[in-house]
Length: 123
Image (tube, rainbow, N blue to C red; front, side, top):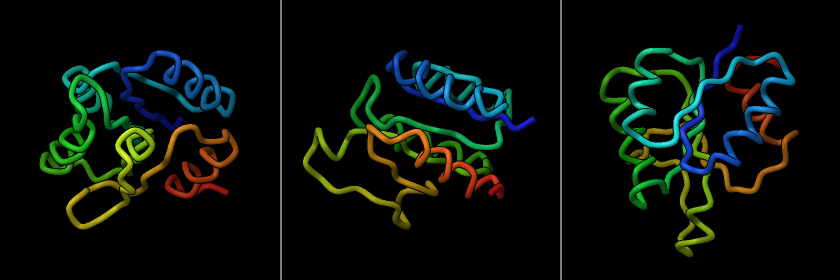
């Protein structure tokens, strides 16, 4: 069974995304902060990570993504965040940001599932 980790400080986002994923037969594990998120990902080794950027600090998700990559985590990391709307900056994947996709909240469930399936190699 596919396992996806969600790290987001907004429990409503975790609940909504979890419901969408579980309805597709995907196992979901989650954490509401970067410390717990790191430990969860290290322990559970999910197939894909959905990661918020702004949690306790405005850039927590960026640092967690870098920490995961530095420890050798090679599975897809998708940033699911509203930072561009809040900050006014247009962020995206770059050589300095070790993630696979940058997705802006809110996102339609079918779009999110299509992107997740792309990274999991499903149609």
